Amino acid sequence: MQPLEGFYYFTQVVDHGGFAKAARALDIPKSRLSRHVASLEARLSVRLVNRSTRRFVVTDVGHEVYRHATAMLAEADAALEVVEIARAKPCGTIRASCPVAVAQSSLAPLLPAFLDAYPAIRLELHVSNRRVDVLAEGFDAALRVRTRPSGEDGLVMRTFREVDEFLVASPGYLGRAAALAEPGDLKAHTTLDYAGEFERRPWELLGPEGQSVPVEHTPRVICHDFVVLRAAALAGLGVARLPESVVRADLASGSLVRVLPGWRSPQGIVHVVFPTRRGMLPAVRAFIDFLAERLPATL
Image (cartoon, rainbow, N blue to C red; front, side, top):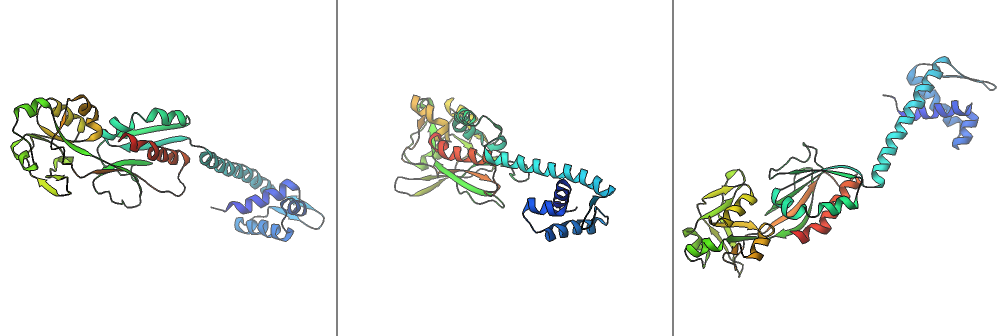
């Protein structure tokens, strides 16, 4: 593929009717302009113009090349204009991924304000607990919640805040179950566990003095969805470990009660990963900046 520079200078020479006029218009030496056109002719192996001290004539082939070069340069300018417009204001489509619990309890209330602020942005939101491949699947950003977030190859990470996870149960369940005064008492209780791909791990609880206690238990329900586990806890099926954002209203109304309130699970860190900071489209930058400003308060 031929570089556009030679075609640009050739069209300028034709538009101005000669090398001298084109050189003055472009404010470059005539010799340099002549070299550009001569180099283009050499690469194409054709004569584009016949010139002498008195005459400047575009050849038949030169007229055809000029017509196509003009159209090609116009398309190149249009492509650059699209990029400039995209960089000038947030617009276009954002493809983002978000875990179910964060989307339902924290992100959903914020989206109207974001879309009102940026009417030229379209949002495609993939709500799933599946860990999407940002680069391979073409996502602009993906929200994650991890106890120990780590960098992912080729991605940039921006953290928002930590979130609490509480042990909760319904008053009805606690009224008929054994006493719960310390983590070891959980062995005598029915538990409800969140586990990705059903790979269950012990509950690790942090005490009021910073001590860490792993609690082995055999859950009656294992599920990869906080909404289902919340419903099971509300129904009195057992003790569940759930994010504070999921059970906030239930704790306020008394439908659920914190179990072992002096103990908590290691906090998950909500963060976003995205392909790059360099060359980021304004729409994606606006979305991430909006989340950084508004999301922590809702978590």
